[in-house]
Length: 305
Length: 296
Image (tube, rainbow over the protein chains, first blue to last red):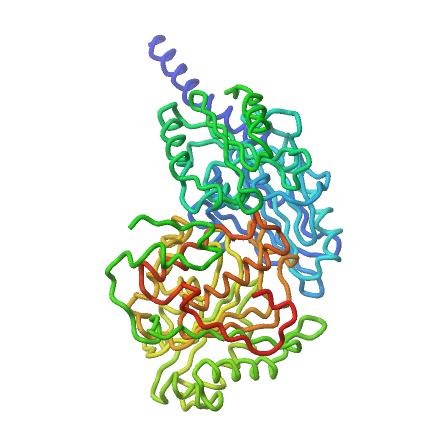
């Protein structure tokens, strides 16, 4: 009997403790998006919450993002919380909070599209007229104003600052970012992603997926000061699930890449320079010289898991 | 034949020559095919299409549509031109676009409907719709379609134009998203659509040349171009729209972002589905009206 009781207790511990631990960790990391509503402001700088909050998952996100859902589904998107605000004049602000599953994925969702100056909100942010974007922990946040963008700036920034504490503690960017060489790196232009959609929206390489990018590939695209050259050089790092797939991608790239067809070719017609080490493929685009590209490739650090 | 969708060909608009005809799909009705003569597309612009507050001027837009359609069909006036496009007994669906940030302007919908009525189509036989076209009784029974929407960039397809505007005719929209929405041309072969499109109106009154953020919209990237691109061939109309987007992107974003990634569906609508021509050498572009900052 005691043995059975001990076994039952052990089973209870092994079954429930991880669940309890996961729930505690989830709460510490900002909790579930469905619980965010009561902790978020209902009014901000003259804009009042309008209509019911909405939560979308990976299937229903298509109902909300008309045509752009795949950009976020390419990350490990779990759910999106949406609250709309309206001003007395009828202009609208949309608060979107994307649960990306992990800080690395949230970093990716933020960086794949970043362009504007930082706003000092969350871990990293950007603000341009009508659009505030930032990431915090495993959440990526987008706050959009449609109409009267100048007046909305105060509300966007205030709302962003109010949202950050609700999202929990900060998280770590993906480890692959640390493999980038430091010299000449434009840190606010680095982005992390998995899909060819994100690559081509940032830097057009080819109309087809010649690097065989997919959900299991981790990619970092970074920009480097290229001396006197107006356009920066680009360094792309791709970690494949195994060496075989990296080798296949290397061959596919060598066969399918045409410099004049890529974005780099628009200016310089420069060649791309690639180097593979095990399952890591590194490629330099738009380098001012072969020597520059070789130096950059040689300086890539070994990615840490 | 292996696809060779390259930057060079996007720029030259000569993908047709590279790809050749790849799939033995049937050609559509004459209105949607490339005839032996060049396919005519009319770009018309007017400085007063928008006022100083970017509000649309319905009277000017009616005038622009009238002039463009008359020129497109070499008709003496707009009513005569619309009488070439539709018959009084036709049931006509005007396929609009309700995307909240940049919808088909009501002024354009009204201008089209007005001329359909003038051509003798009964009011009760005309509907304007987007998301419910599959079940809208007029669209279900339609004998003719008019395709009208704004030009904008798109994260997956590179460009949203007249070809992509028919995506609501299919059961599943996400099913068209793989490979940069490569197969959007197939929409024109759906039974509810095939052979019915009489006119395509790509609104370039306030086109959007770039998109950011989850909603892919920001007013910074919309500009007052004050134009309409009109044609019977949706592929030719979109080919001109793409050239306009590329010209604006080159000017504003630089050569490295000239191509909105990746608008392959336009060329493939031609070479894979045979619904029109994407070859600039086979398109006769007629430009009417205001020429300032015309870009193309």
